[in-house]
Image 1 (tube, rainbow, N blue to C red):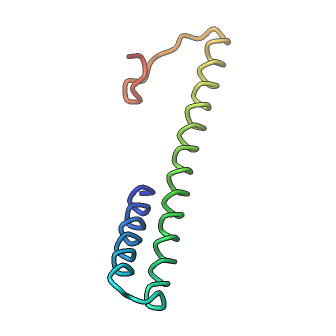
Image 2 (cartoon, rainbow, N blue to C red):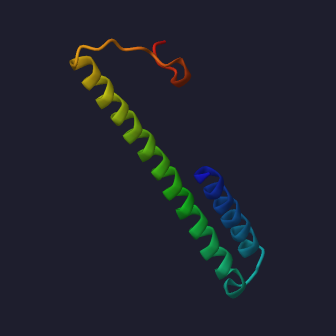
Length: 85
């Protein structure tokens, strides 16, 4: 989702740049520039949040697996998560 929103922002900014090169005054383009910057920043924020969530999920799983190993239990791989391969 973040890459999609950021991509729309980049496309909008490129389109605005092309219109500016073709002679449109900045008074007509400022709202498009602000909108494209907003979309790029929201896309970056969504992507960063997704990466952070995946990292924290992996760290949580590692902690659970380590506690299970230390307690002497046997570990069963979950093929649905791609474990044990």
